[in-house]
Length: 602
Image (tube, rainbow, N blue to C red; front, top):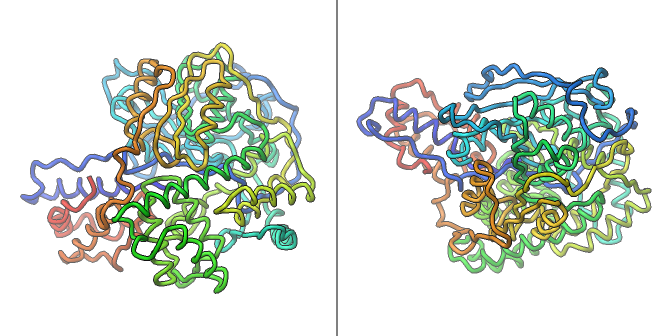
């Protein structure tokens, strides 16, 4: 989930330059991070590549609301051990909220205290970045840079890893992730069944601690956990920012606890439905539309690299044929190749953020001219939760377990194949990828399916829909706002997944709602597309500016190792690995940074 551009790294180098004592740095401020330098971390709600299976765990059954008084706890905040400057803590919650004295797990949390006058503090803004399976702990570390100051001054930013995710008793499976993305042609049931057979030894490895958690990771329980977080941070009512799947979590919370809602921002709304299959069907059209928008914008922009070699749709179609014929494209890593499935995954991942469009164009250009799959693989890696060190988060397995815990239906193998084949037929661009989905086959039967309702009695809830959203089509935002008794729709004409912090025109509306509880007028909207430059001139993106910065450091005599590439920066969006390439304690490095700091993204 990662699709952030590296403002944290740029700020670290700028601060080093300011403290280096060089004349160039004296009196200068570090470049400010901009909202366009990152997007809300988001992950698809589509079925993951490898849906793990397990034996259903038993619980005492669903409960309507969390027994907050019986399960209340506290969070002992302390500085995180990663030098982030954030505070970390845990909160014990019951695995089964109907049995608050039974098994418990610890939720991992992170907090950035409000930066303004304590007298002006409103409370905590609890954040969920989406997924399901996205880490709220990781999200706060990036969003604190891009959420506007008027919000961070008034609210503590609080992120948490939902149950089964990240550091909160994660669901873990030994999955084949690299080269594990499958494609299935129309009507090819034999290939689809062969894929299922390859999954069997992987499915047997799925586990959680305790084992009973495997069937208890659904959104209802996450909403009950959210209420315990609200209580533990000392807020009488919840202020919540939910991106993508976070909109489902927020809407469920509102249905379970309408009187405990202060403000909910549901950005990138999920369809208000318990039918996972219907959601996937409609999502297919969203990605086709987003790809079409990318292709049209590229073909119309002289700065889009693909214009040199042909219309975008033709280039992609030819590349698909070529990679299927030869089997794979090489990458900069001699141990890895880009497969045909990963080719499609790289395109899908890049459609989540308009900031990734230039790199999608570059990746396709390199694939066409050099059979080089490096950039496309890096883009796809982000979708699977691959980290800079080559390890993976548990995004894929937690996504599957949570989605299927919410879905009340289960299909037979015959029904699952028929649905997958039909799903593939709904997509012009990604049919072979979507046809490889296996839904909830092999996962626990649902014991507490998703609770949906209009949240009667809740105060106004702000629903944001982005017209070019690939993963949560704009129509879903309309549906959710109408479905909720107090839903208020705000439309953002923009490309990419979710709007707040990535579409500047949405920020003022969200800020006013969070701070003053002011909602927009019916039918209100804003546009980001009118003035958008989707393909800046080559070399002018923040990623490319950082590459130029490292080149400058090398030219100043700093040992940076191998030359830094665009792929290196995209692989390490937080900069945690790249920053170790230079000795920041060396005065000569400080002087070089000061000499090169004008190249840092602003």
